[in-house]
Image (cartoon, rainbow, N blue to C red; front, top):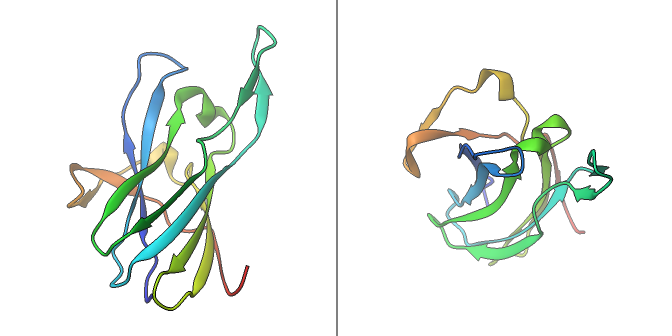
Length: 137
């Protein structure tokens, strides 16, 4: 596994603060099949009515062949008020090599310049890993 798969966000404006604002995809640009395990990093909050709001998407586990892409999460509009991130474990299917990375999805949020990518003709926002570790869990 020479490179990590790409984490790409696509803006999908919703109708209100409770609607999905951004879809998050993982694209396997490596030459190897990769198992990924994704969990959100964030917090829980209480809204104005006292309802507990959980921040982040549900955990995802899947395997991507080279060139495959899958939706691995989304961001609801109100979540941009706080930390929006992902923790991803990448495991090379053939060798078993493990790499862990965190992604700060807010990175560059105020200066989003669409980056052309074959996945989406309009362009998405490639989020670089904030921290990466290699080795056993």
